[in-house]
Image (cartoon, rainbow, N blue to C red; front, side, top):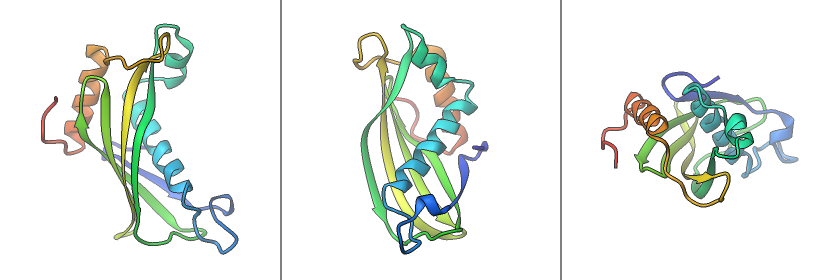
Length: 147
């Protein structure tokens, strides 16, 4: 479960690794996705409800940048730390780093856009949602202010 500091714990299982017991590169993106989803859930937002609502808003990954620094291995206890790097009316840039204890394993940046379920085109967040994300961003150390 994501906590208020933006930290999400992950245990590395067999299914996460290659034959050598090293975390397969794409699985870091899955770890980051889970952390972002839990962060959104912590705001009281149900992505399932939004997906089911014809007028709902969907969160979609628009771009990803990732840098692998160290290999995580089978049975490692990792933590994905997430913060809001920038916030716009129709997008959020998350900085997401994966740590093993005090060791930085992976650095990531994910730009998430908001789109209308009905039209599948970019759509600004409603004021209430925007304010929730902005409040969370401040809690997680976002100091640039809203765009």
